[in-house]
Image 1 (cartoon, rainbow, N blue to C red):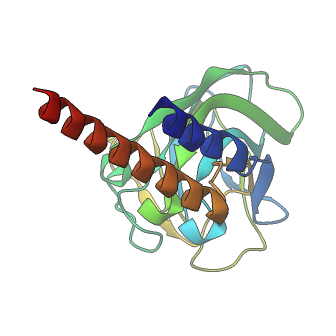
Image 2: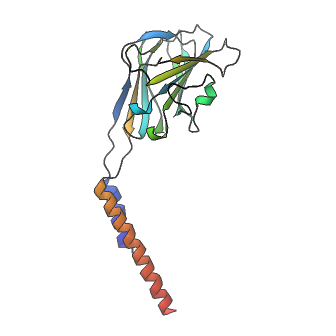
Image 3: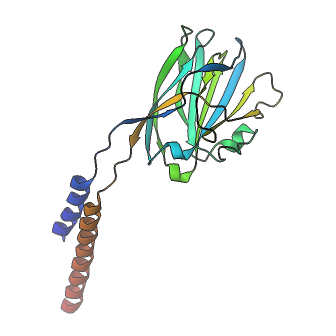
Length: 220
């Protein structure tokens, strides 16, 4: 029986397509959209259409344009969106999925504006489960830029500042999105031939177990 188990395990190990890191990009060019003076804490949510991602995988890094006023605490979160692009809620918490998780938490130096890359906690995203939600929180954020060239219906934004009476209630922007690049590694998927080997291997394991049980009953 162990021989059949070994066959099934080998099929998984040898027949799995290797995962290759890729980049998923949204939008081109930039213009200032969210401006917040020092002491103003901004929270911005962006929902990206699942169609931007061809398969499930792991988001390992994020790149977007940002120029903080000074050294700025910055927190980034990801989740499968609980709402869809085009129908985001003005209540920020209503847009967060059950897998809402911290991706990055640190301080960004207030230097020249430019593309900033953040390597964070790997986040598994499956586009078949819904759109992708990106949430950015920071103090004194400015020049948090949006895409000038983009495809309508692929992104939506909700934002709020600490001057708002209800910090969980924001302003919904239609088709306003961050120029963003996702460092993305597709999940390894067994090749078609591997599935056949796995099925045959597990069937053999089941057959061997049943035959062994019959022998034990006959000997009893």
